[in-house]
Length: 370
Ligand SMILES: Nc1ncnc2c1ncn2[C@@H]1O[C@H](COP(=O)(O)OP(=O)(O)O)[C@@H](O)[C@H]1O
Ligand SMILES: [Mg+2]
Image (cartoon, rainbow, N blue to C red; front, top):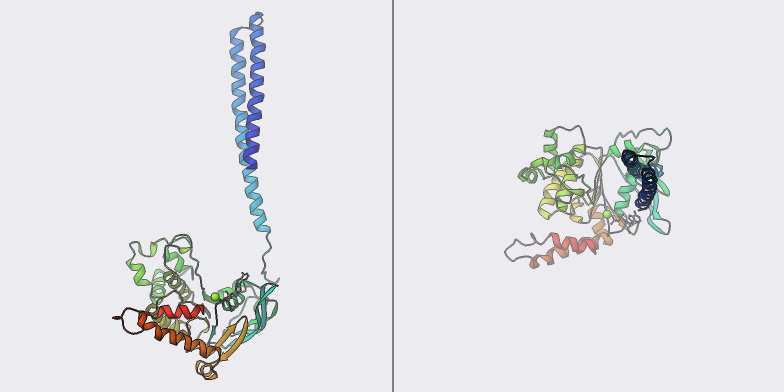
C-alpha cells in the first residue's frame, strides 16, 4: 500500500510539473509568435520536445515501482534467511552410525512452552529389531515423542540415544535418513501420486514404486484412477481421503526402507478391513526392524514386545499385553472399554451385516477419544 501511495504521489507530481511547464512554455512561445520573433514551426517544435521528454519520464515511475517491489521481496527473503533455526547441528557433528537401531530415551522431560510440561521423566528402550508400542489418551504426548526422536525439537532434560549416540550430537540429515515415519497427519506435495510415493527414495524405479504401493494396499486404487500414478493430489493432498493419504505415506516409508520405523497412528484413518490388510504389510516391513508404534486401537499392538501406557506425559504402566491385562490397571480398563464398545456396538450396525463387522470402526473411534 505504501508503494502504491508513493507511486500515485510520484505520478501526480510529475503530471503537475509537466502540465505547468508545458503551459508556461506554450505561453512563452505564443508570445514570441505574436511578437514576430518566432514562427508557428517553433511552437510545434517546443511542443514536440516536451512530449518526447514526458514519455521517458513517465517510464521512470514504472522503474521506481519495480525497484521498490524488488527491494521489498528481497527484504522478506533476507528476513526469512536470517531466522535462526531452533534446532541446529553442533559444529563438526558426525553422522549417525546405525548398527542395530536401538532407541533409548533416558529421563526425557520436555515442554513446548515452559508454563506447561508435556513429557516428564520418560525412559524406555527399544532393543534392535524389537517393537515397542506407546498407547494412551489423546494429548498424552505420544506424537511429541515421535517429534523428539526426529529432533524437530531439542529436549530440556535427559537424553535420546540411537545405538548409543546422543541424537543431539549427530547431524540431523543422517538422523532423519535413518528413521522412516508414517505420521498422524500426512502432508503431500501438490504433485502426482507417483511423485509423492517416490519422495521416500527419489532414485527408486517405477517397478519399486508399484511394489511399495502394492504392499501399502493402494496400488489397486491408483490403477483405477483415470490418470493412474500421474493423478495430481491437490494442495496438501486434499483430493485424497484420509485413508488414501495414509496409505501413500505408508508406501513412501516402505520405499524408503529405513532401519528404524516410526508409526504414529499409521492406520487410524482406515476402515477395519483395510487396516487388517495393511497391518499385515506393516508387520512384514517391521520384521527385524526397530519399530516404535503409536496407537489408539489396542487390538493393533497386542503383538508388541513392550507396551507403554502414557498418561499426561508420564509412563503410567508398561509391560506385555498379557502382563498389563493381568495387572488390571489403566491398560486393562482401556482394553475392556474398547472390547465392550466393539461388542455393544454390533447391534447398532445393520442387522444383516455380520456381527461386529461393519460396526467395528465406530466404537474404536469412540473409545479412542475417551
Ligand atoms: N507445537 C506445539 N506447541 C505447543 N503445544 C503443543 C504443540 N504440539 C502439541 N502440543 C500439546 O502437547 C500435548 C501432547 O500432544 P501430542 O504429543 O500431539 O499428543 P498425542 O498423545 O495425542 O499424540 C497436547 O496437549 C498438545 O496440545
Ligand atoms: Mg498424536
